[in-house]
Image 1 (tube, rainbow, N blue to C red):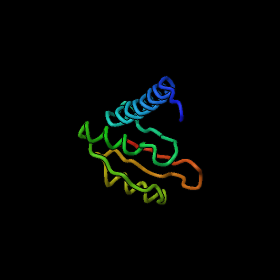
Image 2 (cartoon, helix red, strand yellow; image 1 turned 45 degrees about the vertical axis):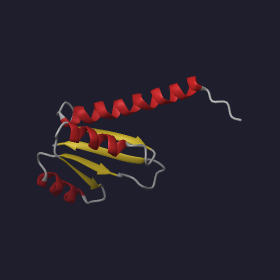
Image 3 (cartoon, rainbow, N blue to C red; image 1 turned 180 degrees about the vertical axis):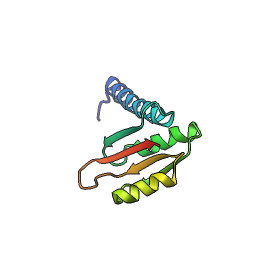
Length: 106
């Protein structure tokens, strides 16, 4: 039988909730144009993009999610095509063990 440590579980849950709140705060600051961009780094499947999209939907902010693999001119054109949108680019570097996301309010 495995003994569960409720204090340890509570600390893990609290740490996870704090990290999610940090992502929500950053997403909101970009969406409301307090900041022009944010950069997230973390393992794949840890709810980075999901949390950002959740915040943008809740705030009713238009956004576009796009794969970041494009030329600089392609990025420039894409930004011009979506002047009122928050742009979510992912993943920035798939060679590393971590997934990176960036979003920008233009």
